[in-house]
Length: 190
Image (tube, rainbow, N blue to C red; front, side, top):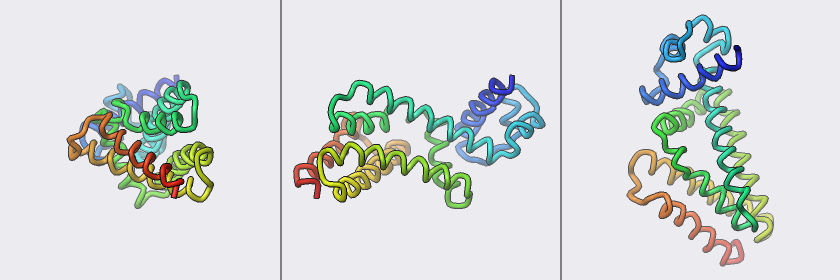
């Protein structure tokens, strides 16, 4: 029962935070949504921060699953780069509760060692996946530089899209990142 209850609390936390649009929700609210007592939620996670970090690990796992699904179809390094970009702008990434969780997570990382550690893992994983494929198309130094640019574009465009400040659709948004790749790789990756 423990894995089922933990999963229910994680889903409830994502929904509760998404509905509130803030981390100013209580463990009691999360537990109530999951159909259990706050004492049981504290037993499994210890604190609201730990529930939130578990929720973010879950969201990141789902993102990783989408990346792997996109990569399964990719044949070339460029296809693999396009797959990572496509997963980043998957419609599931724009569910309101997921958007709220990501935006709150970035803010939490400024004050929470646990959130910063998790964010660093995510950032390094995305960077290493981009660099791995870029190194097959340009030299290593340029691969790191281009990967940083791609990641910044993804994050910035995601935030604009999430906040409704990007009038472009999913494919136009991905096209901006693809255009950047074309430009940088067309210049020899410089």
